[in-house]
Length: 219
Image (cartoon, rainbow, N blue to C red; front, side, top):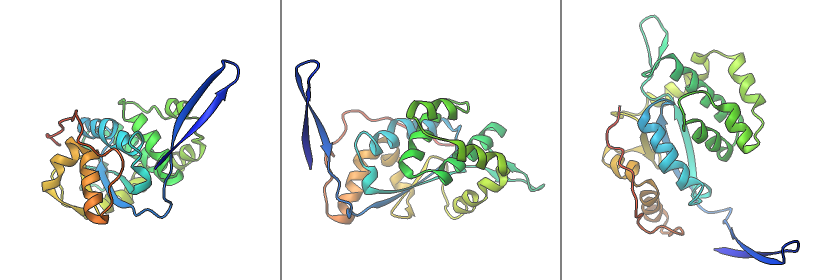
């Protein structure tokens, strides 16, 4: 349900109305887990054009138990060293994401991570400034611990899921390969359908999207 809040803009003699979404604090949440890596082009595309718009613009986050797992196809080699598919820079960025997730709530974490994934460099400061977010704890986390230590728990979580490429999306704590195309191409529409199927409740603005992004090739 939405209610209109009308504001009298005295300086301009105008009456403006904005829509305010009312959320049921007890609304059930559908678990969504994203397994990804920071420099994977398909992960970057999915987060910035599918997941983040759905969670923010379409306002699905209050109905989602969202978990981000920044590890992807990283491996520990025979020497015990962590290696990432897109090199050392990706390991570093994955660790930055890990520290963001440790020290912020899900709303702020998604804002920062989605902003950073619009580029291939560490844009934490620029993104923090854009949203006026204090990232001092994030920086201390990254400074005080090694990349391997930060990412250890994400590697353990990733090892529990047998996916063939990233982004890999689990719904309701279960990964289903047959769901990946619809989740990747039309996340919001698919989320709405999954939510309704589980909770018998329709969310607002769940009509089929006129535009879909095709993200079929993974690596």
